[in-house]
Image 1 (cartoon, rainbow, N blue to C red):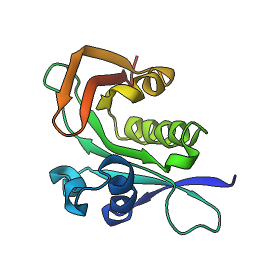
Image 2 (image 1 turned 180 degrees about the horizontal axis):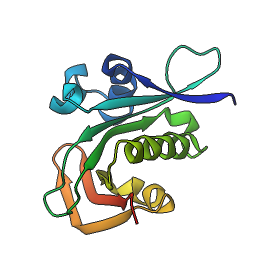
Image 3 (image 1 turned 30 degrees about the vertical axis):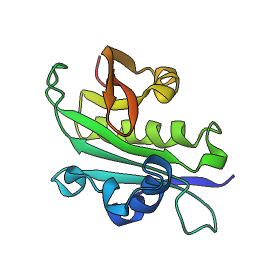
Image 4 (image 1 turned 30 degrees about the horizontal axis):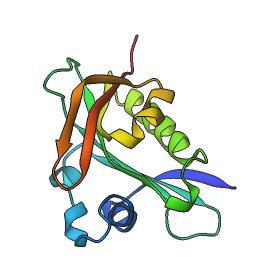
Length: 150
């Protein structure tokens, strides 16, 4: 599979974000306030000769209230086409995002991960912080984080 990752506009992430993370809900349910903030960036994974992304993720300059860091990025809205999940697309996407965050001087990347995704993040050296919590209508989540500087 000729996979490549590139920065995209937020409008390019909405369809897959909606399909995977908010199925059956209105498209605007997957629009986040942070999507247009300064420092935000959106990545997408593509395969050659296919116009639509097969994986997406968004990143925002946002501190976590309990995880100290000079510069933090928050990951939100990560999604991979269901039929190709667990084939490495998400790992490649997130690995490139970590490189970008490090180049921007970040020392922490964090997210609210669905319970079903915690193993994925742990494989990429993320750690769990605190207890699980419920996001109404979405389900059980954990805060996951990775220090980007030693």
